[in-house]
Length: 452
Image (tube, rainbow, N blue to C red):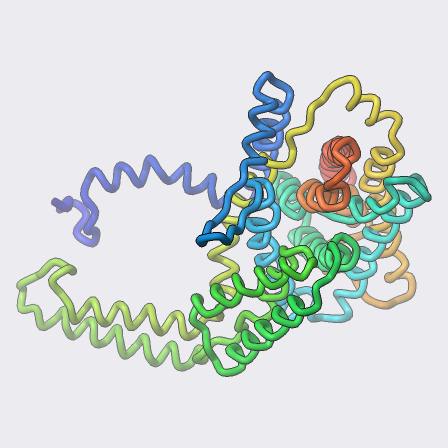
C-alpha cells in the first residue's frame, strides 16, 4: 500500500526507503570522476592478479576460445579478442557519435575557436610520435610509434573533475575537443598502419552496407534496430577485410541520424494537447480514483507524450547518452582488466630502465604531449589563427598537455595491435604506458592546482 503522507506518490514505504539507500550509489554512478576511479581499481586489480600465483589462470582465462558453431562452420575468438575487437567497438562507436556532434554543433564547428584545439591535438600526436621514432629508429620496435600519440579521455577528464571549481569549465571543453581530434588521429593510424593484409571484397561489402545506412538516414528511418543490425554486419565485413574491426564503430556512428523528426514548436503544441486531455480524463473520474494500471486511456496519453519527446530529440544524442555510462563503467574497466595484467619482475624492471621501446613510450607521452600540445597551441595563437575559449590561458593548456600524457586505454590498445606477436615488447610497452600515465596524471593535477 502507498503512504497517505505522500499523496502524490505511488511508492510504498519500502520503495522510498530503498530509493534513499540507493541514492548515494546512483550519485556515485553519475559522477564524472567515477569511470576514472573504476579504471584505476581495475588496472590495479589486473596488475595484482598478474603478479600472484593466479597469473597463469588469469592469462588462460582471457585466452579461452569463445564463439558460435553452425554445423561444420565455426566462428570464434579468444575472450580477450572479443573484448578488444568486439566490446571496444562500442567504445569507438561512442567516440564516433561524440565526434559527429562536436563537428555539427560543438567546439569544432566554430573554426575560430577550433584552430588552436586542432593545432594542439596535432602537436600532441606529432611530437610524441617523433620522439618515439627517434629513440627506436631502425629497430624491431619502430612500428610502435603510434602508441604515445593517444590520450585517455576518461582519465584526463576525471582528473579535471577532481579539480572542480579550481579551473574554468572551458578547460574541460578544450581537453574534450582535443581528445576527440586525438581519437580521430588514432583511428586513422590504426586503420592505415595497424591493420593486416586488406581484403577488398570485404571492404566493398562494408562500403555497400554503410551506403545503405546513410540512405536509411536520408529517408528518415530512426529505428535503433536498423542501425544495430547494420552495424553488426559492417563490423563483420570490416573484420574480414583486415582493417581492425573497431574502425567499424566510427564508420557506423557517422551514419546515425542527427536531426529530430519534429521541431520544438510542434512538441510544445502536442504536449499541451496531451496534458489537457490527461487533465480532462482526471476530472471525469467523478471522485472514483483508479490505479494507473486500470486507466488504459491515461496510459495511452502518457505513451503519446513519450512518443512526442522521442520525435523531438535526435537519435545521435539519445544513443550517445544511453551508451555513455555503460561504456565508461563496463566496457573500459573490462578492457583494463583484460589488458593491464603485466608481470612485474626484475626482467620487466630491466625493460623499464633499458629498453628504447619503454623510453620511447614514456618520453613520448610525458615530454611529447607535455611540449607538443601547448607549443602548437601557442603557434596558432601567435599566427592569429584563432583564440582560446573564454576563461582559459596557456597555463591551462600546459596542464592539459601534461594530462594528455595519460595514454592508457588507447595506447594499450595500439600496443596490443602493434606487438601482438612480440609478447616481451608488448609487456615493455604496457609498463611504459602505465608509468607515463601515472606521472602525467600527477603532474597535470599538480600543475593545474598550483599554477593555473
